[in-house]
Image (cartoon, rainbow, N blue to C red; front, top):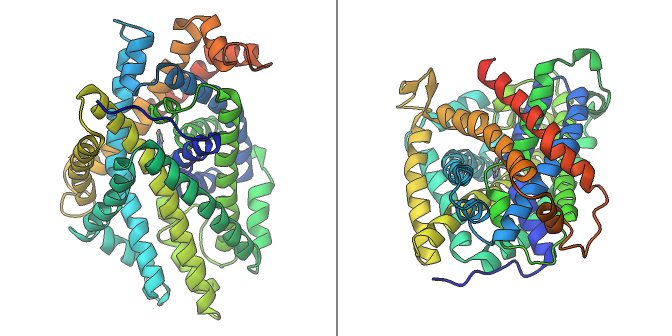
Length: 450
Ligand code: TRP
């Protein structure tokens, strides 16, 4: 069996985890949710969810992973031998696999849009909803894009923890932050951007409904990569002296910062163009934005060219680092459970996932009428993963750390055996036992029966 490596440095561990968290969820899903749920008030609630639920759950995943130094399934079996808790690990690995299979397809779209922007086709005056629909319903183009994207992810994962995941996270995350900085400045300098800022900064609490509250919890989970073993797997590569509470706070802060900055990029730009809606739904990034780029930069096409090119590069980088974590949590299991080499394990996962990915992609075109419960394959995967298994997994992780594991064990892990101070431990423990599981259960029930 291969020797198990750790991340070589603390910054590497933080950047890899942040890379997992920062993804399509920040740049694509977050602005969509903000647009649909009325702007600043949603952001306010979202921030509360991150602090009150997200950070404590992340610490729990970290401690499970680092203590056991194993893939998610083995981690639960080690901490609770012979018990049903193992199912949480199984669900985690299964769902990571399921998410990855459609995540690569959407990531492939970003690759296509990047190529189109760089080639200049995207800025030619076109009907963007037609461009988008024609592309996604094409039987082979999006599959090809998905294969290229999967190839890239596979390449990184098969190089291993230090020279793959850590190295590429250290390279890509600073690039990503730099691009975000440039785009924020560009977006602010557009005429009419003040209105977009107002939308993001002036909360209108009269618009708050219970369902907005619950969308915010769901978004917090998705964005922080919680409840599916991704962060648990990464934490199994953390060194023994890693400060878990501090790392969880750091990763959550970077992730939230990037989500909000994405809002600062997208909304001022959208508001600077008249007649474009903020609540455009999932097409915001692939239909609305190209339109905005085109109109806003019609006098200086070169700027539009840079802006859109950088934007899709940003999306692509964010997608790669998240796909890496999904891939790794499955690969780590296959590698350790079946005693395969890393290369073989990674190849098995890539090929299997890509096969499912093809089905997801075809569901936008020739297979669009293959449905179950009224959902096509893509929607079915997304629904099962994010609306059913993700919230359930969240509750189970809370119950596991809060009720099954020994309190002294948990405290010992979070303080590295008493060497670190963690003053808020009692608050953490209260949240993980009561507040978080109840809040997440509320989301789950609402999502399922709404
Ligand atoms: N957090 C990533 C994003 O924002 C997506 C992601 C990666 C994820 N791993 C996950 C979501 C595990 C849920 C669970 O795009």
